[in-house]
Amino acid sequence: MTSFQNVTADAKANVYFDGKVVSHTIHFADQSKKTLGLIYPGKYHFGTAAPERMEIIAGACRVVLDGTTETLAIEAGSSFDVAGNSGFTIEVGDGICEYICSFLPA
Image 1 (cartoon, rainbow, N blue to C red):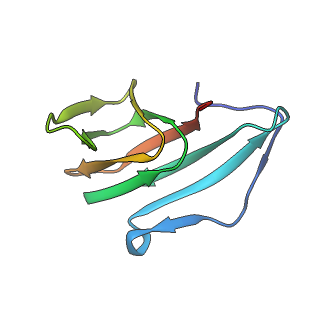
Image 2 (image 1 turned 90 degrees about the horizontal axis):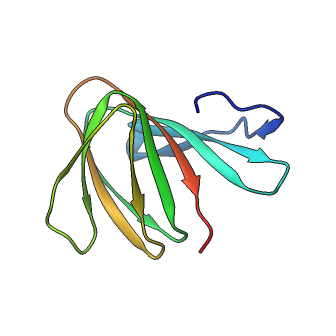
């Protein structure tokens, strides 16, 4: 899904890595939230508190989940899950990678 109805959006952006990763948080009536963002070319590591699902909606990236050595090639229309209290390294080669991050129940 790339369109959301009846949400509240935070105008203030979440800015990481000197603006190379930027997202905005949207809040749903059921108290859940997602972030919608862009990742510019580069390699970045993120830690997670809660479990997450990263859906890539445009572009492509390579991902290595913490505790593994396997590199996952993720294309638009695909997703990957990250455990809580963990992390992942994401690399975008060229272009912009667009994503939806859903925070999953623990």
